[in-house]
Amino acid sequence: MRLVTGLIDLHHIRAALEKSSEVSSDFDLNDGAFRPQNRQLRPAGVLVALQKGDAGLGVVLTKRAVALKHHPGQIAFPGGKVDPTDATPTHAALREAHEEIGLPRENVEILGTLPTHETVTGFCITPVLAHVRVTFDPKPEPGEVDEVFWVPLSHLADLTSFQVQSRSWNGVHHKYYTVPFGPYYIWGATARILRGLAERLAL
Image 1: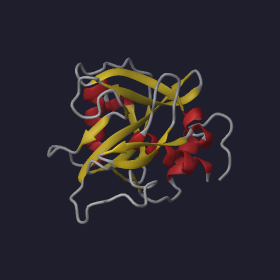
Image 2: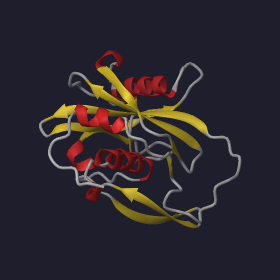
Image 3: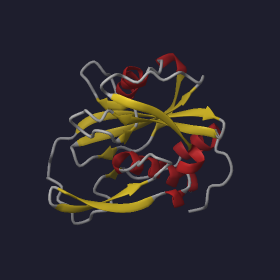
Image 4: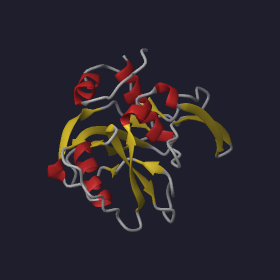
């Protein structure tokens, strides 16, 4: 893979979306990890929202509320499970982005989707790549989102920004990707999806 240098624009993103890559999962770095056979995965959609800033394009991320029962305080994309009213994971991602951070649907240009990502918690996530046409004022959903922030794509597209770390989960040692940025510890499924995008940009 080549080293990505310079500012990345929408042309690079569209070209990356045309390249092929395999689906990913939380089990990628854990060959010996137990994965239940024939388990039913729940569909979900997340919005990988690209917005222009002083340093070029960047990705909009959230810090989940620390009081949440599941994944409190973790860094995540706006998004969630596909509800019965959602026609597709893309619809779920757009609905959740509006609910969680106040991003209007009409301000979003859908660019395409990345390969799905399977989580250890039983979700099949479709990452929806999108362009925020006009800079918006985020409105974090009370009780769900503590913070909305922006990470330059130049940082996330640099494969050297990623690290592999590990921790014990349910008595089993698991490895996972991280891509730290300032005070934000980006890891798990979010980091793995961003790593997949970085790999495509580097092809």
